[in-house]
Image 1: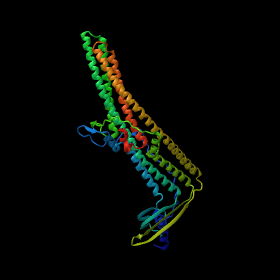
Image 2: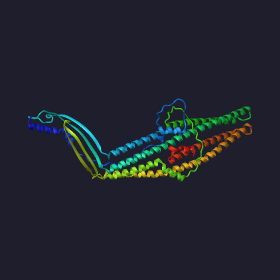
Image 3: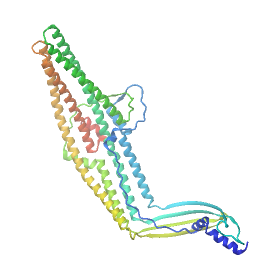
Image 4: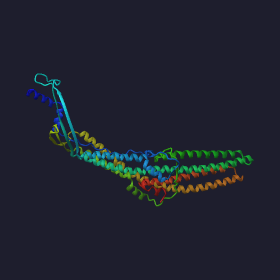
Length: 481
């Protein structure tokens, strides 16, 4: 091959894709690092209905499982769906924080490239005397490490700080979710207790009405009472049976809701073992309780972190206008083979200055400012809502305490009235209309008493949640202190 032909072949080889890669491997050029867009503050999207579900992983066990209030809440804190999803949101926020951190750290990549190639010169259009048909095989080995590092990127720094506050906020949201689990599971358990009391009372009313019915039947057959008394007593008896059926159905459905909230299999049989007594909650000062809640509520602390994250995101949008200084470089060993190679490298510094991006920069700033204003408004609203929650709970507790006392007295009076009416009817002094009315009054008084006990316990549990201590100290409030 003549020297001119070889020179032409080498020129063509340098123009091929593989040879182009060879050139870049020896002296790669750096590229400017783009400015970071403002971080979007992420918040867990968990609604109250989520806490009514759970992750069910345990299989049902044989027999009847005893279940106390403490055990139900412990299971809820382990299996409740709302707490699980909130915890996973925290993991997502942590991942976002690590991603933003990487933009501030150097990135190092390693690459090993082995290239072997042949070129058909005639296919490339080089024909004629002196040109070889095929050149090659030829190739190279390139082992290279590259480094990229944003030395000064204030926008990325602010985004990292925003993601850090966002992560702290999601961790605090987990503590708030624990309070919500205690409130949800505690309410479900107390509802089942109230349902069981209604069943017992409904069964007692059925038994009482059966006695009245038998008495009316006997009197009618003996001719001492009209048929109307028997019909009235039969209606009362069947009415109480309907109330018993409704109470049993409600109890069964509420047990399902409780099992769903704590991760129990719906095939698992269980028995409620806790019966919370009535215990007044004294020494309640609304102003002191509000101060305690504002200092302890995890959701308020989490929202403050979200506001801080939005503030940094707003600064990140402003800092997009600032220059970004970055460095890139590589160093490696390249040659025909590892035995015949030589080290090569390059280093590039970049200064990236946005010149004509006014629409995008203003758009990012307005979006970040809007999100910051929304977070501040939500923070202000939550502070007022916490104060309202605490005061409402205290008012509910005080009202429920009075209702318990009044309804307890009503039950005693209604039972006495029923006994008096039954004795008068038995003695033939009066018809059984008074018995029917007394039975209805006793049923209403019993239901009001059960409702007032339930409302009192739930109000105390709601106060613990409003104060932000339900996750740890709910026993002081449900059982009284």
